[in-house]
Image (cartoon, rainbow over all chains, first blue to last red; front, top):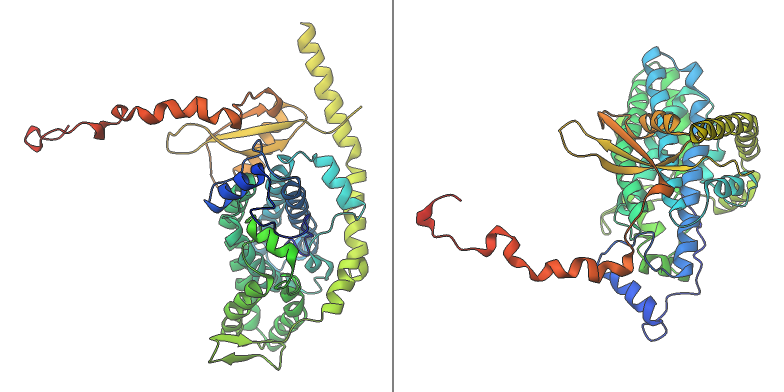
Length: 329
Length: 94
């Protein structure tokens, strides 16, 4: 998931008696499956939580371009280069759909950007890991986009209309991303012994960071319960992580690669795989800014924003001048 | 001076002769750039053959609290739907 550890702005789920008349009506609409639209009344905490969640999701799409962009100039064939370019362009598009959805809640694009650049708002921990070889581009598409899809598919049913519509668009495009990644993995896994080693190495490095994308276990979290009551979170982190493992393990087997987890085992009783949890200490460390690439990623975003300032200002000045000329005529 | 580019709402007409449909929004300094950006953001997979952009600030919208007065009157006018009328089968297709 591209939004992790979203702190729900609330003190827990209110009972119907504790709710105001407006809050009751609002909850009834959500329970009835109605979509909430930007101009509708909504609790302040619903608005604040959604701005955080959609904003973080958008930032992840934008920062997520960096690890893959790293390989555009070095893609092994012209076709792979064109595909990767299209994929990275999609990520930019996904970021833009989501920023627009967040803006309908009354936050401006510049505020969101500034909060990312200052470090006040976060992006997914996964993008703080480096893409060291071409096989990593395969692993990112297969695992990282695979994990993102797992989370985004249910969010198509989220209660906030603009968010739901952005998710529907994104999900339509996301499946190309995962398949192009798996296609790279197939090629590598069936290639020379050295290529297969690279594919295995990429899986080894991206497996646990991918499991971390769903965030730590939240089954006892009151924040999470409120977000679920509001239908801005549909499944628990553990449910989605399990689903991801169940889906991905057979795909790894097909590639002839082994998942780096000695405790991984099919459990006949539960009908799911048993698996090891990622190192949550590492996760919190990466979130805090100490991952292998946090500094690089933030520096790249800040540089892009600063270097683009004259373009933004110049085009705006030109548009104002032209509008003034038209008005004078 | 505030330099954030204004917000534009984007409408796309698909291939099959349907009306333009709202697909989302974007920021651009002027209409020309808004159309160029809309092409990149909203038509990467042949979604459309025509783009309209409108400054978001120029759109007037009905208010959610007017829902009742605006739409409830039509609820009681069931005779506006063809299924209100029973036409005997003998008459044939109508």
